[in-house]
Length: 273
Ligand SMILES: C[S@@+](CC[C@H](N)C(=O)[O-])C[C@H]1O[C@@H](n2cnc3c(N)ncnc32)[C@H](O)[C@@H]1O
Image (tube, rainbow, N blue to C red; front, top):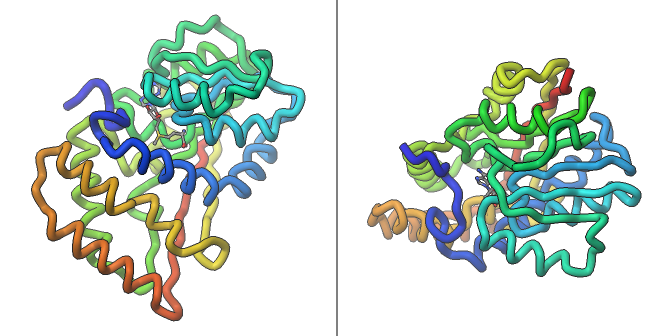
């Protein structure tokens, strides 16, 4: 099993530009409800926030929009992501945002520094999620809050009518992620992870994006056939037909009159004692 985890844009994903587009669409699909839940769970406009696994900067930009009088330190391990985020956010002043290249396992930041921590779609990629949560606990101020948004593959993707090709691709991706040290079913584990790390007052929310609220095509960006195909190659799997069948199944699915797609994201919450 990998100790690096199941997400490095160059090595585990590969198709970098396409991946940036995928992440951007994915960030937009859930943002309205995420923002609502972040605020409801205590994010305030003047807080100092640490974002973990901030990626290309799209979610950092969204967080900044909720913090007109606050600031974000974005922690990201991958230099490709850091470079993109710095360029993308170059017009935002340094006292509002800093992007640092570091691992969530050892951020190098001082103890008791932040009011709020946000980790979106990173914990599913970590071989030691409890260790990561302990590091976040260390840098939060007493009373500071953490939210981990992530998925659980058994119920995060609901397609009607069911699409067997999606299921087949999904099972392979799940297996690859596991081999690389990740866990696509982390959603159900979030509260245990938070408790083991030392957080208290834990709670769990679910937010749902439905294809009647967005373009149905955008939901398939979460498992974009172009990105999937490259992930299979990187994992040494030669299953061209599977991806081709999947592509055709999507083309058909989006034209069906009553087809729908639901994406369910879980938001695990905890407080530092
Ligand atoms: C699926 S992307 C999500 C990016 C962003 N949070 C979003 O929601 O669009 C996961 C991100 O976590 C980063 N990551 C993975 N392992 C990490 C680690 N140990 N420390 C910090 N970042 C990490 C990856 O490089 C990647 O940018």
